[in-house]
Image (cartoon, rainbow, N blue to C red; front, side, top):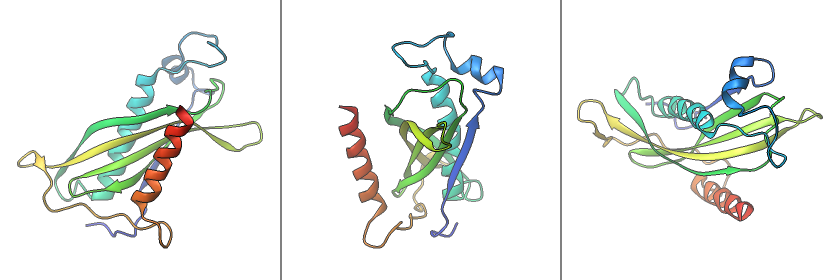
Length: 171
């Protein structure tokens, strides 16, 4: 079982500015709609689903433990800012909550502005469930816990606060 102090995350860059194929697959049309460059949401979910599974397997040591990770749901997908089609998109995933047989993975989609600073474009949460390969039932042995990021604050409390803030932003 992995050490509970290990931080598990994954990052991937979608080269929308430098590679024609990802650009053509992710951007609908050549123009902007109401100031936004439309991104195919299904392509975003495909990328975050793959990265979420990678993070879940690494957090649980799923391959060594003979677990199968399945996506239960994507929720709280919120568009924060407009997507710039001439810029690469960075997709980052990290675990935000863990229970006995499931975990929550947050995915941030970011881009870099002219000053070189990253800004958040989209955020989404994914619930991954760990199944025992032999029975295809939820894992009964438990998953590794998360480490508290700061003294006095639980990961669940921080994640809940972030979700509430995102909900307020979305209204």
